[in-house]
Image (tube, rainbow, N blue to C red):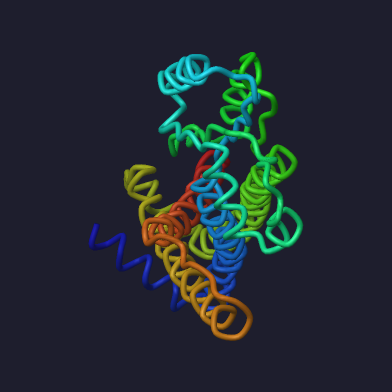
Length: 285
C-alpha cells in the first residue's frame, strides 16, 4: 500500500494539468448536482411545511343528526392515515370567520342567522400526506351521507408534489450526465499515464507482478482525484449557497450527510474511471 500510495502521488507531479482537469470535471459535475440538490432540498422543506397544514375539511349537512356526526368521527378516527378529527360547530365557525375575515364581518356581521355549516377538520399523519393518501381520505369522507362537501386543496396539492418529483428527477439526470463526462475525462487521463509507463508495466508483468499490484497505484490516483474534486464541489456549492442566501433569498443548507455522500461519490467516480481504464489496458496487453 505504501508503494501504491507513493506512485499515486508521484503521478500528480508527473501530469498536474491532467490531474487538475480530471478533478475539475468531477468538481463541476458534483457542483451542478449540489446546486440542484439545494433546490430539491428546499422544495422538500417547503412541501413539508405545506404538508403540516394539509387537512381535509368535511362540511356537514344541516340536517345531520348528532349521532350521524359522532359515528362519522369515530369512523375517521379509526383510519390509519388520520391523526385527529376535530368538530367545529356552526357557532365556532361563525366566530372564527368574524375574527379572521374582515370581509365576512362587513357582509354578514349584521345577520341574525348563521350561514356557515358545521364541519369536521381531519388532520393526517406526517407519512400519509401524499396526494393519493389525502384523496383517499377525502373520498371516504365524501361518501358519507352526513357530509355535504369535502375540501382539501386538490387544485394545488398535485402541483406541489409534482414540483418535488421534477426537481428530484432533474437532479438525478443532470448528475448522471456530468458524472459520465467526468468518468470519460478521468479515464483518458489514466490511459495517458498508463501509456507513459507502459514499459514499466511490461517489466512488472515479466517479473511476475499481479494485475492487482499494477492496478493499485492507478486506482488510488483516481480515488484521490475524485476526493479532491468532491471537496472542491462541496466548497463551491457552499460559497454559492452563501451568496444566494445573503443577496437573493434565504435558503436551507443541505444535510451534512449529503455533503459527505457527494465527496465520497467523487472518490467513487475517480476509482471507477481508473479501474475501467486499467482493466482495458491489461486486457489488451
